[in-house]
Image 1 (cartoon, rainbow, N blue to C red):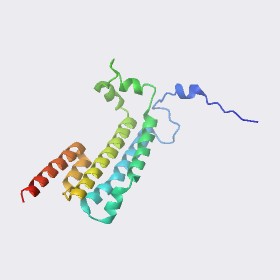
Image 2: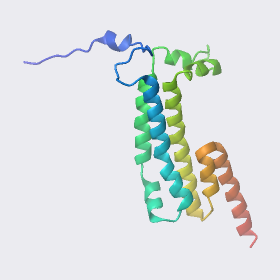
Image 3: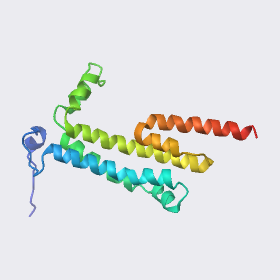
Length: 176
């Protein structure tokens, strides 16, 4: 004899998230704030190692690990799940050309949960870029501390800084 379990389809398709109603014992803003803090604190040791001890074995082993990305991915997925509503896709791609519109994205980011998920997304991407800068600098024996520091705060500028540093370093080594 087989037991057939059928999910209640309406539960998934009509799920509305009302910020005033929460099955959790924590309010949405507490969850968002907590994950924001955990995510921010989680990346700092990796940046500290790359900046303060770039040649240490611990730093090199840490930069080979995918653990920070797994942790940040889990945090991001959790917040994304909590912030998702039936209107999310419609808001993201509101134009007739199915392109994001700034006003719709701004509306989405009024939610602390969505804002926290975007922050975790940025932390993951910034750390990934900083790790690439670190590895590239190690491979070519180029100073990267300044670029890695910039990746933490202003990632695209950190990447640009590394490219400039690399070009200057190559230019100086070819004139010797």
